Image (cartoon, rainbow, N blue to C red; front, side, top):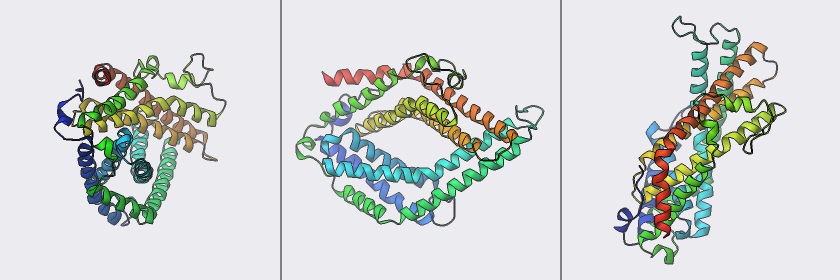
Length: 356
């Protein structure tokens, strides 16, 4: 069970400002070491990663952690500086995540289609021998390659932009001096605990609002069935009237879970600042990451299925792949629901303890 960040880890530091300055200085250092590799290697060829996958991961992790700390512990930082920094960090996250996201989506969708179209005697899939399978695969591969190439081009343009140089300068300054509010920074380090508890409490509150009754089974297909009939439950998505409405309905259905992943990350980073263990939250983050990847992949397939002049056979195959991804969405929700009861008590406790 996740330990409550109650006393020991942060109490060893003299002030809240020292804890945050130490954490952000370390993350800014990771950022500055990883960034040159991203800028240098990304221009070598379409689809290229930074010099190593580890460097790309380090850069994104540092950006997310800095942004998370600025959000959770906002009262300790100069407000104008913190807001501007968070805006620029969010821009960089979106920029860096696009191309790898398309790559993972291609791996997921093409792998799923190949499995469904498998013709081997021991593992024949439901699309084995279907005439639309090769065309559907070619369509997905072509569209995802084009999207990845465009994302790569945008990345090249921005990695050498004045905006990125300004953000790098901001991180350089952060590595030396963190803009803090003097009064808040001078408080004892335990003053960070209520903000950490608030991050944990926000996650617990969001999880309590999730429609758990709809994720009680791993592969119920409930999401697909709900789209075919008018909603009768308070939290049920209204029935769509067409493809665009179906997209909106599915996006609304996924939104609470995607929000939960954001809150899991914020809670993880808050615990990191306090040097408290976050192992169980890391696993929840992984499961909700699978949820988001399957959800995004399903959107990609739905978009491909609306390509003009595709054959009915191709559209049928894409529909099967879309349903397969939506079942993966439900499987991830089920896995989250199985893990959450063991984790929740350790997160709800700190909020009550710290607020007393």
